[in-house]
Amino acid sequence: MPWISKNSAGNAVEKRAEPYLTPQMRSHLSQHIVPRYEQKMGALLPCLHEIQHAYGWIPGQAMLEIAEFLAIKPAEVIDTASFYEEYWLKRKGKHLVSVCRSIACEFCGQPGITQAVKDALGIDVGETTDDNEFTLIELECLGSCGSAPAILIDETLHENVKPEQIAGLLDAARKAGAHH
Image (cartoon, rainbow, N blue to C red):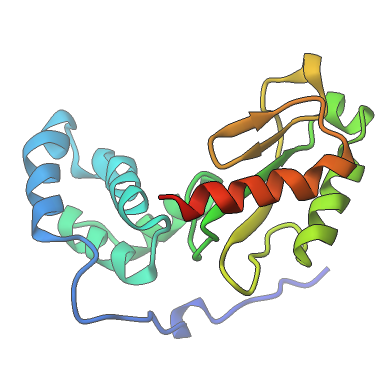
């Protein structure tokens, strides 16, 4: 099988006028995070978390700003951010729907749960609805094997889920989000 190369170096980074790594963030990181590490590279994960916590994802411009701040190569930032599943490199919806796909959940009906979410939202796994309300993902394990299948909607765990419950759970999340 031949190598398929992509033009990574030719990718343009979408930029905005104001920085993602704000002066307040730089100050916090400089005073409280970077000093904990022998080398600045050690502070990369906390810097990525800081950006994601503030914006819900890590834009390309923010990765360039982190590289400059830590005096490391931009490639080291993108390699690290893209390696870990917990970092979001593209925008996600207001609500994150995470379906457990562990063997216990799969055995207890997870494919039907995933399909019910896909049908209710009109998206596939890894996609976000056009209104930016919901993003659907699958996770390896939510730690609720004894009450499978399980689904996590934002911070709320739902256990022993049946496909016919999905529409109601999504509506509840939508309504809860409207009150914030």
